[in-house]
Image (spheres, rainbow, N blue to C red):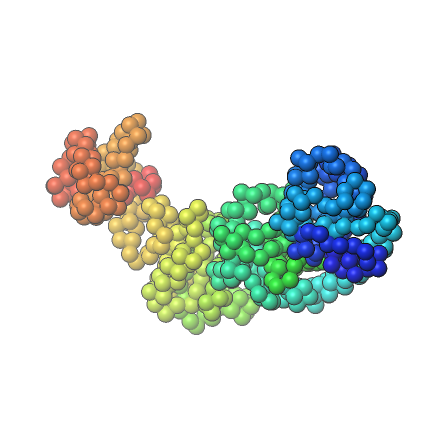
Amino acid sequence: MLTLRQALQLPCFEKATIVAGEGGLDHVIRRVHVVDLPGTDYADWGRGLLLFTAGYGIKDNPDEQKILIPALADQGLAGMVFSMGWYFDEVPAVMRGEADSRDFPIIALPPEVQFIDIIERLYLEILNEQFALKERVDDIHRRLTQLVLEGGDLLTLTETLATILNRSALIESPTFEVLASSLHGPVDESRLRAIEMGYTPREISQRMVKRGIYARMQETLRPVRMGTMPDIGMTMERVIAPIVVRREIYGYIWIVAGDHPLTDLDELAIENAATVAALVMVKEQAVREAQQAARGDFLAQLLRPESEIDQSALERENVVGYQFDRPHQVLFVMGQPGLGTRIDFWLRGLGQWGLVVAREKGLAVVIESKSNAAGQALAGRLTAELGSRSQPMTVGIGGTTNDKSLRRAYDEAFEAADIGARIGMTTACFWELGLLDWLYRLPPETLQANPYLAKIESLAEHDRKNNSDLVRTLAAYLDHGGALAEAASALSVHRNTMLYRLGRIEEILAVDLREVNQRLNLHVAVKTYYLGLK
């Protein structure tokens, strides 16, 4: 692109003098405009304009001279060419000061130099630059499109784009998870953190939402150039473009400025890359859907009684990577929709084989496992690394099995997940459920006949009417074995508050919490209440 520095080397500028704003000579000239009344019509000229003027509109207006340069710089104008000797013998000091502070170039010309001679030459240079730019963009488009035809994936796309532009590139999902990235040249702290964590840091996505950047992309479906935000580690400029399929955003592609300024080529290239990324994503989605159908059929076979598993399942085992002669464990994930692909990628990153299948109420994850502890540990990592406060998940873990049929292991995992989700657990092992498993299996009429459950329901009604928290208080007290200090800490209340609440519970329910059998029955009733089974 044609910069002011390059333009000043042209013969038509041989009598020009840089009087201010020399730090902005690398601004790109996109178009030019002559005006004699800059004080009245500079509101909407836009980025990259080189303004030519003799200053007639500001010659008798010091206030306008003071605000003109900041207004032009804020719009992103490339600079100003000021013809001397008509209304000014020199550029006013207030304008030079503002221009220096904002790196806004002011170029002075003697009166004998005609604007038309310079403007004709600049437009010729701009047209030549635009033709060269179009050829370069067309070449980038051909290279990226060929990548898709050759079966390239998102990682290949980011690597190719990064090499072409000599900048780092990254693709993320609509939920800000990093899908592919390629480091090329220097990057800032924010980019390094995103790659390390596997998702765009929350403070960055929140800041972009607050600034309306995502909303703007949703409306325009076009790239956005972003300035720096040093307080959150973004010390380099960026361009971000939405990846759009049928007007739906499938993700975002980013490039970071690195060690050289962003140009129009970057914005055009990333827009082409976003189109290619959309093609890749649509193709990969079709493949995933086909794989998911095959996996679903295969799991349905495994959930049959062992005697009913047909030969076709045995023939498909190599397609999904399942080994019938190895022990397996089933995890069932509830609480976060759309996790299947993320868990697939996550397991591959751990070097762990897994069969991930969407079910009606969550995800079944079949893993190879030699012990119950292995599945329990994997479930703990899963909730820690893929869970979130806004969308909590529960993972139920079934016991290890060597059976060809996974029916028992699947039912155990589903039951553990269902119970865990009802009472607010992040992981629930079937073999640790104990009483909860027994309650889960009792018929509703048996549960309804328990008088202690009626007491808990009456206490819950009291909470609703009086905006109190007595059911949760009783649950914490019983869960901690009657230890006041621990229960108070779990509820973040003072010990005296805990004592007062327990007194009210005894009064309302007509019970004695010191009596062992009553405590036991109340504890069972509280668990039944939270399970919500009747």
